Image 1 (tube, rainbow, N blue to C red):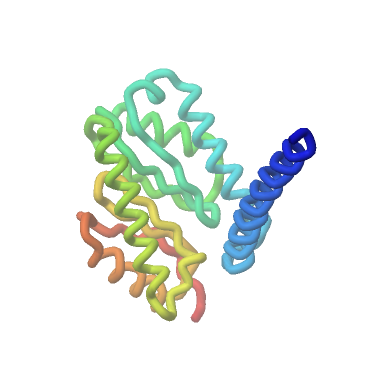
Image 2 (image 1 turned 90 degrees about the horizontal axis):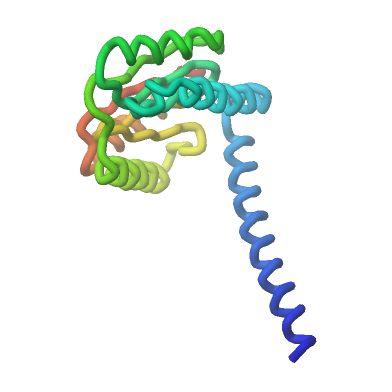
Length: 189
């Protein structure tokens, strides 16, 4: 019995390793297929964290809004809700003050933060859109980021126009999608 305990513990550790290897492999495949350089991908991830930190550091923004910043190829997409234009403008100015470069796409809606139920539904919509994209031959989903906020689907990525239009059609024809907003940058086919 005493020898069985270390064996079971080792087996549990190895199962965790398999999961870590799988996650690493998928993440590596996505990085390899991404049109952005590794340096740009890391810069975008760092900028995501900078935006989150800057917004959370301000009590009024943290307590009264629901805003997320997403960076793709140096461009910033701000989504969510602010109760008034004063707070929305403060968020935009805070992000502009970070001097991240690239375009800023302000998609912050004036209104109360969405409910947990709506956020859960948005997660489900994103999952459905991504799943449908995965099943579409000729569409490289590793180059497209899908984000849903209050039924609006935002599509980001560095893709050619044909890929972008295919992604838009799939999203547009997915149940639960109220609107599709393209935030693509276009590469040569």
